[in-house]
Image (cartoon, rainbow, N blue to C red; front, side):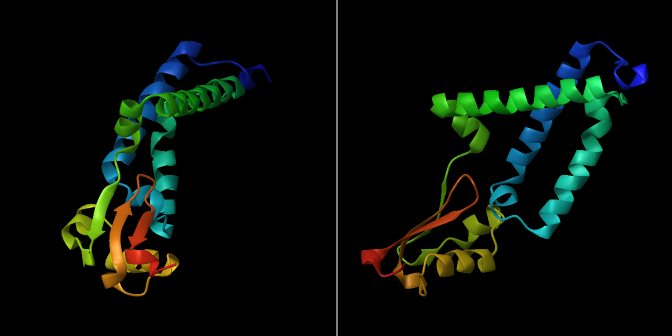
Length: 161
């Protein structure tokens, strides 16, 4: 029974592992682009499950104790809170973590090269148009791929939803 609570390494190694893995996964998700977050597909779910499995041993170092799990969960929640706190108070930090919005269309012209670079399909763009009530590309004044992956469509003279 005491094995449930006995750490296999000092507590601070769990915190260090948690910080390193958190930063590593954050950087990888940031590199993967906005679509990975905003346009969640079944393939993205598979990726998240596999990433969780891939980093599991790196984060817990093979420790299966409840104490280790508590230290890791607390570390990850604290890191998430720190990132949210810093993002809310520092525009530079927020841009570093979240990126910046990207213009993907203007004055009825869709920037297909930008969509391709941002990993947004034409179908996803057309879905965003439908969701905004915009039936014609010519009605688009500006379309922005937000940092959360959502596409905001501004129309000419309010012709669309």
